[in-house]
Length: 282
Image 1 (cartoon, rainbow, N blue to C red):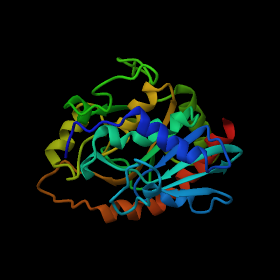
Image 2: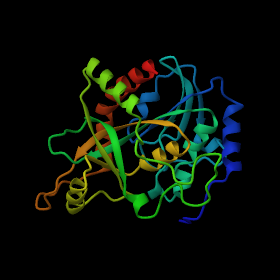
Image 3: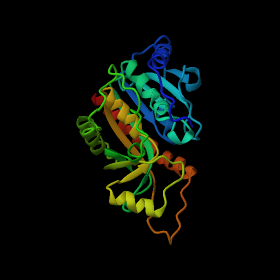
Image 4: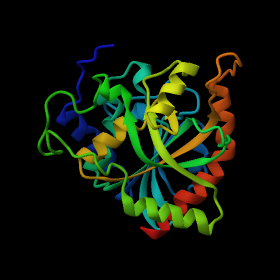
């Protein structure tokens, strides 16, 4: 993997122009669907649908559970762009390529991003199928030197040193809480830790993550949120808890991607109700 591959402004403009010329709506909300959550977008009507492979310079997912489609339509009265799947750093993409779609969203006029993922729960009281409202994140990949803002900064996109003290919008989070309560959707809340993957975590790593204050762990989301905030977008983050990790190495607990996808069948209806409710309130 060449970590020095950066996305250029002209590539971003070309991808945005390709979509702009072919869509019937002007989306203002972007939604990124995580592993096994693509069914959220299955029943949307009168949509413009594009494969990632058809959009210039757009990265394409290689992982099961990520369809690699961009869907542009109206949902609950809001013009939305839905990414049915995402790419990850562990697939061999650079952080600039991973976050390429978020920059394209902003160029299309999107000012609010709803980002979802499937994550491992770190609280033994939680159960697979729970939703977690992301209050903050720990970007361990970025701390280790793979920040998506590394390299030249385009001041037309955002500042060299963007503030991340409120990465996840307070108003959107409060809206999500109210909707979850009204719809009787169980909603946890906590800090999401982003690791590079693709191997799942060891019991020692789980203990470490708990010590530093994480409630869920996954392999995405933080880079997209950083780029969205860099460009002035409001962000709402929701994790679907696909499994709950153990810290006991003497009691082996095998984690698999198929388990993640199976949990998505429970998570997706709850996520759909919550996100639709948030969209109604925008």
